Length: 141
Image 1 (tube, rainbow, N blue to C red):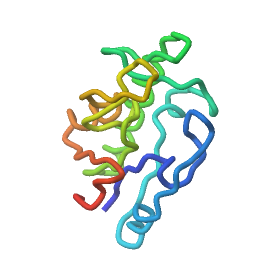
Image 2: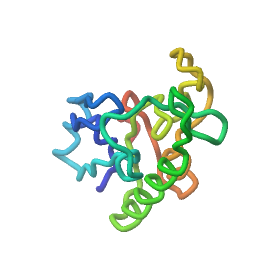
Image 3: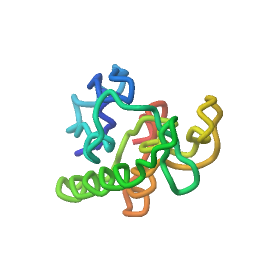
């Protein structure tokens, strides 16, 4: 089975701060499945490292107030194309992210507080019938 995975969860240094967060338990899935690393911010044309961003309503704003919504939307659309091409039915995405978060995301105040909601990519994948889980829920696949 082909599974989309946030690239940062596989140790790829693509997070906003230039880091990755290797999740050994997710990497272990490659013994049975094809893991497809993706980063919507990179696919959307943003650099690494980049200024932190959070979702504020339907927009994604950086800490300094720059609107990067179009980058996030473009990246999500490109990943959806990839998911369809590779017949991916599942995605394991980085929790709390304005792109990948599922169920809870940062609230847009850059204070570490969470609110109910989904990231741009998670929302698009769900609308297109792809099951999305966060890195702590990977066993639901």
